[in-house]
Each structure stands twice: as structure tokens, then as C-alpha cells.
Amino acid sequence: MAGSMKESPLQSEHERLGGRMVDFAGWSMPVQYAGILKEHEAVRTGVGVFDISHMGEVFVRGERAGEWLNGILTNDLGKLGDGEGQYSLMLNEAGGVIDDLIVYRLGGEEYFLVVNAARAEEDVAWLEERAGEGVEVADRSEAYGAMAIQGPGASALFGVMAEGTGIELPERNGIVRAETGDGEVIVCRTGYTGEDGFEWFCAESATADWFERALAGGAEPCGLGARDTLRLEMGYPLNGSDLMRDRTPVQAGLGFFVDLGKEGGFVGSDVLAAEREAGGFDRLAAIQFDGKGPPPRPHYEVFSGEERIGELTSGTMSPSLGVGIGMAYLPAAHAKVGTEVAVDVRGRRCPAKVVKKPFLKR
Amino acid sequence: MNVPTHLKYAESHEWLEEGADGARVGISDHAQSELSDVVYVELPAVGRKVAAKESVAIVESVKAASDIYSPVGGEITEVNSKVEQDPSLINSDPYGEGWLFKIKVDEGADLGGLFDGAGYEGLIG
Image (tube, rainbow over all chains, first blue to last red; front, side, top):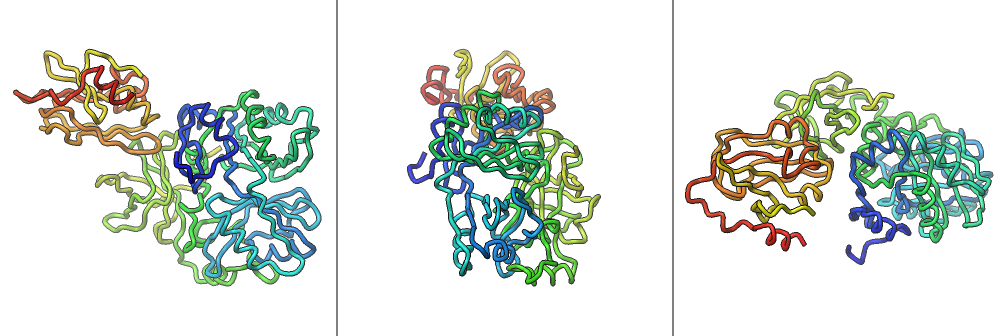
């Protein structure tokens, strides 16, 4: 591995477990251990643990913190009580996506943001540039290690990991913060797989010990490969692939997380309002192959008859469904559920349809 | 890694087993392990004439697509339809049920460029 890559506090655990390490956003991270299919299956039927130490942890506090942050993020922070979180987006002035993130209200005027590794520096710069009187932005990404525990067995595993700490598993989208004998722990109940689960943020130096506890409790170590197949089966977008600076959350189908009624608006809200008003915009469509075929991959072209109408932003063979699935921004006329399209794979047109998200119905 | 000594190997990780009715070709245990979970295979048409080192098949894992090259020149005489139905056979039994195709080797074809088991082990070691 190139020495210039950042290493997670779990680097030696990954090596010991046979993790296949790749460069992900400048971090050395495992794409898989035993195999993507086995890891995917573990999360759908048991419990898996993912290293997410590369993700950014940012605290925003101060007497004006909530009001100020609400003018930057798309969702309405006013809906959050103490200990609650929500999915939200940070946009540029043109309404394009800088990052998607989860923001939690820790209590009073302190907020905790979990952001993508590839965008952490840019997010912090964007926030710091705009922070004024009464707002403090603290990037604590270096101080924390983190893991995501996902699967129907997650709450049982939580009992094992939290034993003796007094920490209780928060409600869905909730957050708890506690001091333990092994330092600070923050537990959040969200996920990126469609299964029950939680994130466990802890002191960098204690991460390996907590990870070992998760493994001893029966969690299958899972890499970025399974994380991608699991999230795509749910139709969850990945920033940098499905979300980008020249696409808006309205186009991405994330309108539920955009509150255009907020007083004072937010960065990019005027663009989104105009786009929604005008209609006819491209939409991020979920595309499923009609039958068995080659796995669709990012950048494969999508056709309607002989007309090229877009290209895949994500694509994979769905391990749960056994067919190809992917997403693409398509013109509105082609983005309706049920529309027949074709995906070009090495010159062969594979028949597919626009389907409703998620691909994997529960 | 399992490297049977009765087979010949190409630098691009295919194996070749010479038999009375032509040669069978598949990918090595090392190759299937590197690829990881195989989820799709595209095999050549029977009757196709191929040159040595020509791309003749595609094996795809969840993460990537890989070209498979014919270790020798010849004519494709049979493909393994079982592996098209169940590509995971390539992972579970790369030298047996996971074979890919049979080829009638061109007369006078030079197999000298292929490795024996020990040579291939040296390559992947």
C-alpha cells in the first residue's frame, strides 16, 4: 500500500483478517474480506461490522448554531429534539450537492454531523467560511474511530458491545453520548444497508478493542464492496457517484429531505424552488434488468430504442435479487416507473425497466 | 493455492488440460481467488476459431469484469453451459466443474510458451 494513504485505526485488524485493501477517498480501506456475497448475506440475515473510521465527525455549537446550520442544510433542523438526527444535504449556490450527511442534535445548541470521507475537508471549509458570531465549527475527524454494525442481529450485538457501559441503544435516528472505561462513545441508530443497525463512534485509540468486541459477539467483518451492494439494493445514493455538484437533490429524488418551506431558506433553496416549479427535470431512476445478464456497472449507457438517454451512476449484480440493478439520471419522460429501457453492455442491449425504489422490497 | 501438476498454465492465469478429444480450458485457483465471487460468465460461440492469447470469454465478479484469453490457437468445440447457469462453480471447483470451454488445438501449435505447474507456482508465488 502506498505510504501516502491515510490509515484507519483498524488497519492492522484488516490485514490480520485478510482484508483486501484499496484506496478509497485517500484512505486505505478493505473492499472485502471473505467475499462480497458472503458479507452481503451476513448483513441481510445476521450481523456485520463495517469500518467507517474514514468518515468525518464535525461538531457545530454556539448560541446561534441551530438557526445558522438550518440556513445551510436542506432538511428542517427545527424538527429535531435533543438526541434526534436526520438525513440532510449541503448544497452549493447552484443547488448542486456538496455532501449528504446525518446531523444530530446532541442537546441545546450542539450538533453532530457525520459526513463522507471524500468531502470532509470541503464540508468543513464550506462551514467555516460561513460561520459567524456565536457559531463554532470543530472538525474532530482525527479524534474518532468508528464502525457501523448492521443486520437483523444488530440490537443483540449492541447488548454484547455495550455490556457494562450503561449505554442504551437509541431509537431509530437517535443518538446517545456516554463516557465509558474506554473513553467516549457516541452511538447513533441509522445505517446505509436497509437493515436495523447502529454506528459506534469511539476514541481513535480504543477503536480496535471495540472492533474486537463486535467480532467476538459474532459480527462478520464487511468491506466497502458489500456496503455498495447493500446500499444500492435500497436505492440509497452514494455521493460522488449518484450525487454530484451539478445535480440537485430534487433530481436525485431526495425531496423528502429538502424543506423549501423553511423560513429564510437555505443555500441553494431558490434554485431548487425554481426547478420544482418549472418541472420537467431529469430524475435519478432506479433501473432493474428484466432477467439474468451481465452485471451493470457505472458509466454503462442507457438507451430508449436507439436514443441514448443517460448513463448509469451506480450499478451492480444484486446479490439478493440475482439480477442487475443500477441508477441513472434520465429525462423526465423516460424516468417513470415501468418505462422500458436498455443498458448497453459491451455492445449488447440488455432489456431493463425503471422500477420503484427500493429494489429490494421488504 | 492449488496448482495441479498435470496441467499447463498461461501467464494470464488460464489452465489447459490436453485430452484425446481436444483440450479443456479454465482459470486457475489463484485467478478465481483474486477475482472473488464470480457472478457472470460470457463464453465463446462453438465453432469459433481463435488465436493464442486472443480474448475469448469474460468472467465477472461483483466488482470487476476480466477477459479470459485462449492459451492456444484452435477451434472452440464445446462450452460449459453449467458454468453459465451457476458461475460460482468457477470459485468452488476451478479445475473441475468450473471449466470454461474445450478447444481443438491447431495442428503444430506451440505449447512451449505455457508454464508447467512448478513454473506457474513460481509466477504466482
